[in-house]
Image 1: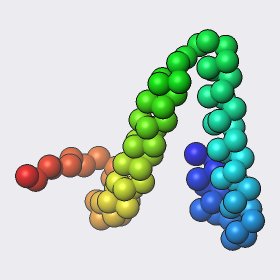
Image 2: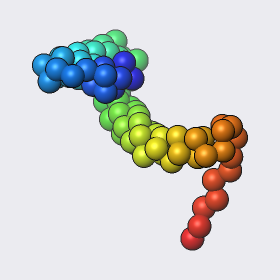
Image 3: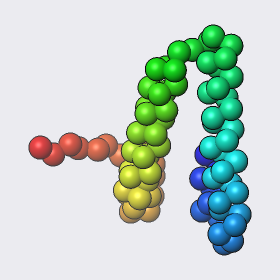
Image 4: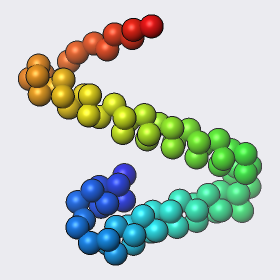
Amino acid sequence: MVAYFGVLTSRSQKKRVVSVDAAVMLIALVGFSRVYLDAHYISDLVGGGCGGASTARGTEMLMPIWLRLFGALQKPIFNFKVVR
């Protein structure tokens, strides 16, 4: 999350790359340590990574809708209606 905001707020391409690289390195090191300490299997890390990535992507996709509705309604309480 910190890397995401670092990418959004930084104007320098080098700072953006360093921010993302640091986040990826930290995630990889934590994952490696969990497997090394026999706390998780590799499949647990892959599943958690896929779940985290899909949650982050879904949040990123819904954020503009939420901000537009919040600006129109002036309150953060509203219902989504799924249309099929």
